[in-house]
Image 1 (cartoon, rainbow, N blue to C red):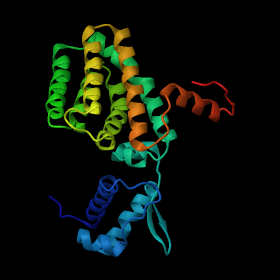
Image 2: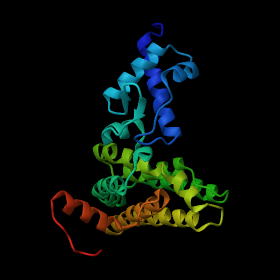
Image 3: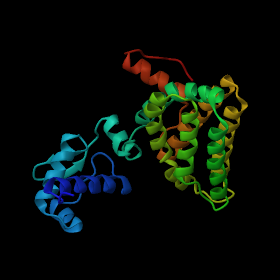
Length: 262
């Protein structure tokens, strides 16, 4: 086994900075701690911190401004997905709309496929995740992990590994918004938001279990659109339906001024 080299230390610092951005819910424009403070807190040299910041700047995750410090930037969506940071960077309703539109492209069809191809083991995995969510609701919360497990089981049941690897990271990261949604709505064991989340997931589960692809597809669209509205409220955005936001964004990008009221 080779000794830990400088490059390994730099990589560790990169990961720690990413973890700090995620845990502190930092957004584009927020300032990171000074180089000397990071070196002290991480017990590494300032040279290692400097190399880590250069690496992060190269990926577009931070911006180094001479004489001012280092600030969180807004990299590509693929970079955000790779590092599990999308919720922290979802700073506008348009960001949320774009990612919801991407989800709408893949997930309803995959849920329809799951209704056709789901095995008893797939359904058991979904049911186990639902049981975990039920148990957590009785304690006044729903954690992200059982929701992630549930959606992974649904997508895996579709039987297409390529679509699974494309779609699951998007759903996983949006699901990580759940703590913010619960906080925004003041969740308690009997609160409406918790009961609503359970009901939405049960509807999706029963639709897949029915074996009817059209029912499953409709349930997935309902689930996605409802999640979009809940996330808008939790993030303090003006609430609009997924259809209206996608339509508005599409016509805006095409240079079309629409008068349609959704």
